[in-house]
Amino acid sequence: MGKKDKKKKKMNPKKEKYLKFHKEKPSNMTYAPPQLDESQMQQVKLNEERIGFYMRTRVFYPEKFVNERKAKSKR
Image (cartoon, rainbow, N blue to C red; front, side, top):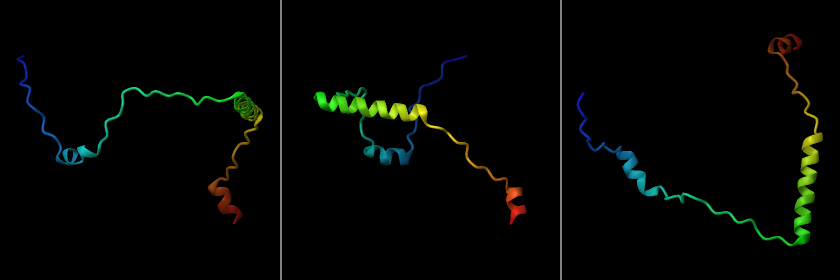
């Protein structure tokens, strides 16, 4: 088995045409949360507690499902 010749691949003309519209994206993103004062921090904590309580105590009722055959017979 011999080595394959490394030929330059042909670029798709459409890809080449629209290449200029692709923006360079940074490899790492830095995110700094906003600095909140004491009252704002308490409000955020209270909101998170309320959302957590709601999600824990919420009752998921099953969706009503009507069979097509049953729906036709009731018409």
